[in-house]
Image (cartoon, rainbow, N blue to C red; front, side, top):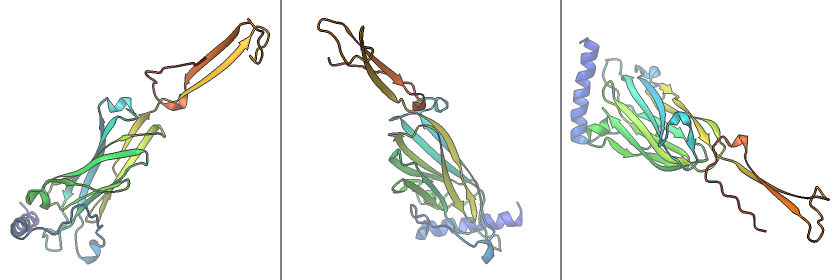
Length: 237
């Protein structure tokens, strides 16, 4: 173990004891970006982040309107933020995800490991929700600590087709923008009705006792990006 790593571990042990006795300074759910680490003698941290989407069906086959979707944004601490002496720096890891306007948020929460919150016995807590913006914030205290933002909801309307959703994450001067592509299927049904007779192709006139032909056509428009199911057609004469 290098002197630098030993110094970080020693500082972490001291910090863990202090937080266990007196409580932490992290304010979960209130994102506040950190600025100017390098300018004041700090060695900024480093995180790796990724975003995933899960549904009841195979995500590769696309999602449908009304189907429950679970988005997860996970960030892993690769390098801790340290000061000039190699000591641990108390800084928040913040994840912010802005969901599209046609996504209905049902629930959102934070999952953490290796954070001050987890050390204090609160590894899971509610995320901050403001409109379509959802955020998690926690303070990592060792390498490999993770913070995960979970958002559960559904697509209640179009636009449909390929949708990309990008989140942002920040820790000690390092910023990440994990994204995820999904395919949203939305059937788009149209219906037309025409009338015709033997003597009038427009169906405007028909002789008493004559025959009139009605044609009802139902179409699943190509721009609907989805398979139409359980389609019922009624014609009230």
